[in-house]
Length: 213
Ligand code: SF4
Ligand code: SF4
Image 1 (cartoon, helix red, strand yellow):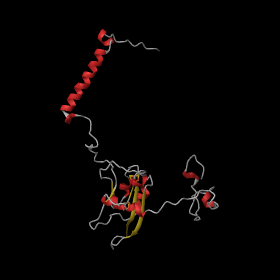
Image 2: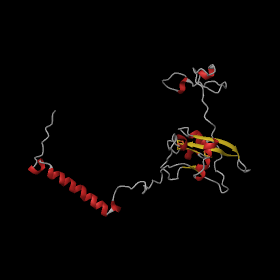
Image 3: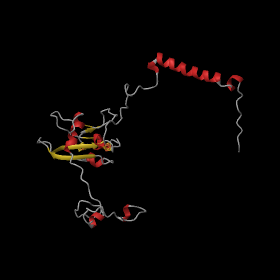
Image 4: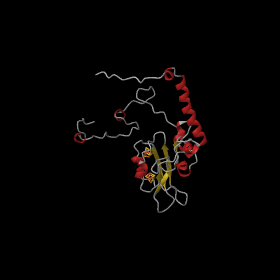
């Protein structure tokens, strides 16, 4: 059903608009003068000169906690790497110098561009070795590689060990490329390292309404 909307009756001054334009400008200049004179009451945050306070539970850039002797608390248990839903943590373990500690992380990389800042890694860590409390929310870089941070950076906020420690990217030939070796049944099944592996058979009962893959 059509609804008839009654138009408001405009006076002569309102109908020629000029007076209303100046009335609107008056409101704008009144707020401008009020804010210039009384800047502390302005609701606008002068970011980035004036950073906005973060919530106590805010998850900012990760850091690795450090022992008194300067070694990482991380014992390379891989719990965080396993828990990470974005698969953006990469750890290489090595034997620790200290007799009461079995392992430590040799390299510890986080790809901050893939990270979804869910905090699962912090929750999963049994050693309180990784935290997300640096209050760093502005992450700036010029290349994708700048956002892959390594162990020294995560421990001390500096260092570029991850750039030198990473092996060069290897171009993996794809099936169908002229230089690619003939595809094996394993490769057909999705495996590229040539190791004979069986595909995991998921029992049909585990997946309702779907076929076994
Ligand atoms: S915050 Fe989440 S996505 Fe980011 S590294 Fe930790 S577990 Fe992975
Ligand atoms: S869960 Fe903690 S101790 Fe284990 S690898 Fe990750 S940061 Fe290190």
